[in-house]
Image (tube, rainbow, N blue to C red):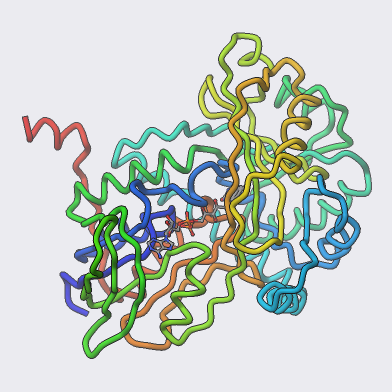
Length: 427
Ligand SMILES: Cc1cc2nc3c(=O)[nH]c(=O)nc-3n(C[C@H](O)[C@H](O)[C@H](O)COP(=O)(O)OP(=O)(O)OC[C@H]3O[C@@H](n4cnc5c(N)ncnc54)[C@H](O)[C@@H]3O)c2cc1C
C-alpha cells in the first residue's frame, strides 16, 4: 500500500484511538467514527485504571469454572452467570472451556504484550502532553490465605516467564508498601513496574492529538453497515439528526468497536466471537482531608474479592470489579454496586462513600481471552478488538501490531512537536 492510504476506524474507544495514532505515525489519512459525542464514552470510560501486566493471567482454567458454578445463585458474587438460554453465551462458554489447554501459552503471551505496550503508551502521553492521573507506584496483589497464595505462586512463575518482575511480599511488607491497608493478609505479590491512570482522560487526550495531526473524527455518527468493494471499503454512516445515511469510501477499515465488533465482523464474512462480560466500578471523590488520608495510593488487586483499585491524583479513588455473563445489558444494578462500596468501607473505613459515582461497562471478551489483531478474510478489512479485561493495558501494543499489518514495511515517523510548541507557532 502506498502512503496516504485512507483508513476508516470504527470506534473511538482506547483501541480505536491508539490505532488511529499508530496509523498517523505511518503517514495514513485517518477517519475515526463513533456514535458518541466524545471519545472513550463506553467501556473505555471508567474502568479499573490498571496498566497491569500482573493481571495477564487468562481466565481459562478449571478453577474459574468451579467458582462460576459455586457462585451462580449468589447475587453479590464476583463472577455471575445468568443461566437463561442464549446460543451466543453457551457457544462462547464452550469455546472458553475448549481453550483451557491454551492457558499457559496465552498467559505468557499476554504478559509479553502488556510489557511491550507500556513504553508506547507512556511515549504517546509524553509527546502529546496528556494528563491522565498517571501513578507509577506499582500494583500490589493481595491474598487472604495460604491456599490462594500457593496457587498464585504458580501463576507468578508464568508471569515471570513472560518477562515480568513480580515478587512475593510478606504481610509486614504489604503494610509498608500501602500503610492505608489495615486488613491482615496472608501474603501478596508486588509488581513495581505496573501503573495506573484514567483511561477516559487518556483516550480523550489522544483523540484530540489525532485530530491535531490531521485525523477526521466523525462523532455522534452511527455506523450502520460496512461492505467491501473493488479497491476498498464502503461504510454507511448516519450522523446524529440526519435522515439519510451517507457512504464513506476508504482503502481499508479497522474494526475497533468493542462489543459491537462481532456484528461488524459478521457483515464482512468473519467470525469474531466477542461476548460482553459486564463489570462495574465506583469512583469515590475524596473531598475531605480524612478520606484523602485514608485512601490507598498503591493500586490494589484483591484476589478473593476480584476487586481492583486505582488512585487518580489526590482527589479520586476508583474501585472496580465483578464479571457478569448476562448479554448486552447496560443496567447499573444496586446489588452489584453494593459489594464494591462495602469492600471499600471494610478496608478503608476512613474513606467517605457518600458521593460514590457508579458505572458499568461491557468487556469485549474473546473465548480464548486473546485480542484479535489481524486482517479479515476480505482485502482491506482489519481487526484490533476483543481485548477483554485488559484493553487499557494492551491497546498501545496491539495498535502498533495492526498498523504494521496495514502498512507493512513503513517505518513509523513520530511527531517531535509538543502541544506547547504548536500553540507557540499558532500565536
Ligand atoms: C469494570 C471494568 C474494569 C476494567 N478494568 C480494566 C483495567 O484495570 N485495566 C485494563 O487494562 N482493562 C480494564 N478493563 C477492560 C477495558 O476497559 C476494555 O478492554 C477497553 O476499554 C475496551 O476498549 P475498546 O476500544 O475495545 O471498546 P470501547 O471502549 O467500548 O470502544 C468501542 C467504541 O465503538 C463505538 N461503536 C460501537 N458500535 C458503533 C456503531 N454502530 N457506530 C459508531 N460507533 C460504534 C462505541 O461507541 C465505543 O466508543 C475493564 C473493563 C471493565 C468493564
